Image 1 (tube, rainbow, N blue to C red):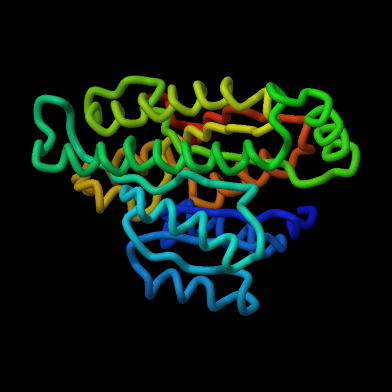
Image 2: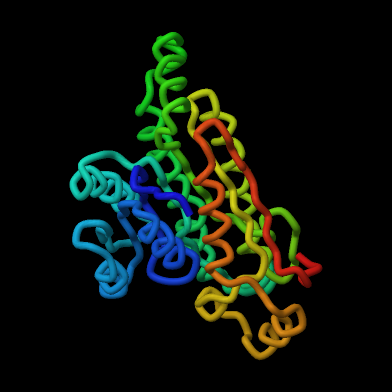
Length: 270
């Protein structure tokens, strides 16, 4: 993997699973990071594995707009510059369909998976878009800056959104969670179209079955779900998803892998 020492990134949901795996891969490649999750002690443990100052910690609820503001400010404070990579990863799962899922958990899941993700995407878009001249107000200045960035291999600007296969392929057994990922998937594509003219890449990653803490926290019945995972083994790991993200963000600034749907080889559905 080429050095990513010119990348300054924000990762939400970084205390476990995909977020933790990506933190390690980016940090080992030289990126400077701000990582977020609710579990401050766990974040500190992850950050301690790297040189002092390389990985800053901002604990808090990713569904809270104030946490989003803190994350963006922390990049400037910890690393002396704004983020050029934002990974919208934090999310909550929920077992069940619209008819049998726990209605008491709907609002919190929607707040984290949709509203919180939207706040982060909005602020990330504002921050990354402003790092080059506005092509609408000064097209020649933008063209010159964009050409210079591409020609010199300067850092790309990326927003990576973690969706799900169930955000594209309907599963009646997880339709409430899937509905939030349908929303996120469509919002990511809409944001890609909005930001393309600014040279900002928005990438949607849609994982299939990945074995992490997610299943237990979502309330899955693990005997039955475990049998399902065994039937299609090996299922994906967090490292598999991180490797896909690393591939996309390592492309030259003028190249955009905008959508990756990744499943275990033996997963037929969803």
